[in-house]
Image: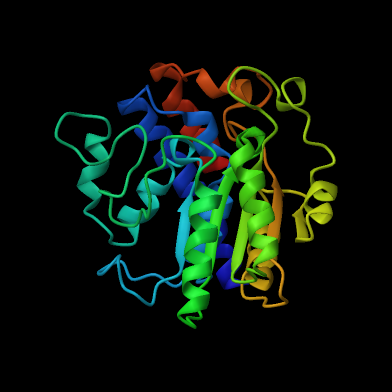
Amino acid sequence: MESIKLLKGKSKFIRCETLKIHKLAPEIRVASSLSPIEIFVSLYYGNILNYNSKDPRDDNRDRFIISKGHGSISMYPILADLGFFDKSELDNVCKDGTFLGGIPDPIIPGYETVNGSLGHGLGVGAGIAVALKIREKKQNVVVLTGDGELNEGSNWEAIMFAQQHNLDNLTLIVDYNKVSMLDFSKNIIDMNPLNKKFEAFNWDVYEVEDGHNVEEVYHTLKNTIPLRKSKPKVVIVNTVKGKGVPFLETHALSHILSVKSENIDSLIKDIENAN
């Protein structure tokens, strides 16, 4: 229970830190960065991913490809907290001369790939997974996508490729927040039933009903990522876009909206005081 208590505390901490970054850099995609926090916290603080903060390119590391890069600003405080870079860098997000931009790239210690154009991360992850298999390496490859990103055909090419090559060292996590850039995802391309689509492509499918219940997220990922059953795996995590900011949680345009600077401190206080 102590480990779950830690994960709950870290989730709250990272949500507040992400809003603090948004106050300094209003241009970041804050709603998209708030939905996967419990996923990131489980992977990094739950000892699910093997990483080395002192040597981020350690050959023994698991590979984590964040395909929805713009929606991962909440990774910045995690990486800083774990010692990938100095915490003072968080005060410089999106400023001239910083390596912490509005869209992350591999110059940031802890990021593997360029994450600007959506739809490429799963293909890259599948390629890495093949290479590790050929080299008889045991590392896991984990890819995070958004649900709107699955509209890109390149993802489905990678999904077919991964099944063809039995990439059971590959796990796709879908941040299923159901809001795309300019509307609810169902009004653009309705992916439901998403689980059935992956089953049709012969993937093993797991689901997290509440993506903000960090205990549920943690146990599902911990039990799924190490599995080796000759199939690639997908974990569909049902999340809320803009989680922690009430007006973003229900807004069809939350992806492109900002929170007024004068409201952020009170939102942080509400999150800190929540059970």
